[in-house]
Image (cartoon, rainbow, N blue to C red; front, side, top):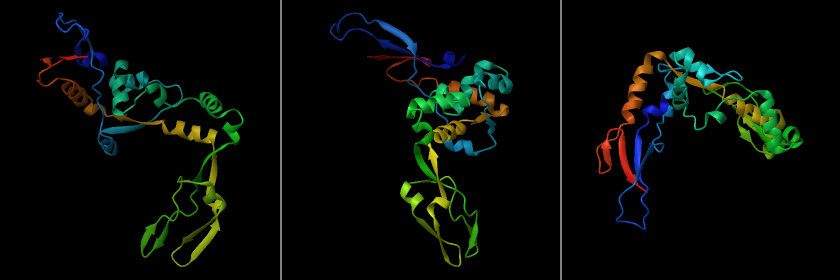
Length: 223
């Protein structure tokens, strides 16, 4: 279904060494045209529902559930700007474990430190009447931050604490697990806007008149 909406490209395979020979054209899908959703639109809850992916669930299943046809899985791919769905979907814990061990080695996967991250020591303090986050959670810091002192202002006085009380090491395996978990949340275009999206996608994949124009769904080019 997706490929039927992609326009065609008619390209000349005539060898350059024979400029006066008759052209030999081959027609193929124009995969150079990529439809990309503006990432800012994900902020509008009006258009999308957030969906938490579970292990081993397929996009075809979600498409069937929301759009009534498993072949609309490509809509989920496009609306989430997935380059390669195979690597854009979460894997089960066993697969993540194997990926970590192959990538870092069986020992370094679990003992090797990938980076350090801040932990939420203080939620919010009121400074000059305004709520301020003293130290945000999940910030990437280096080994020096972890082993040194950290000083912050609580609104009244400066407080110094050990860096290892406001940050923690993240092993290579933990990093891969966290990255895998980030893939669980996807956006599903609401059914109300689904027909409009399909119509816009079809329109975007029509050619404008140019020197290479043949039809709205076919143009030619030379290689």
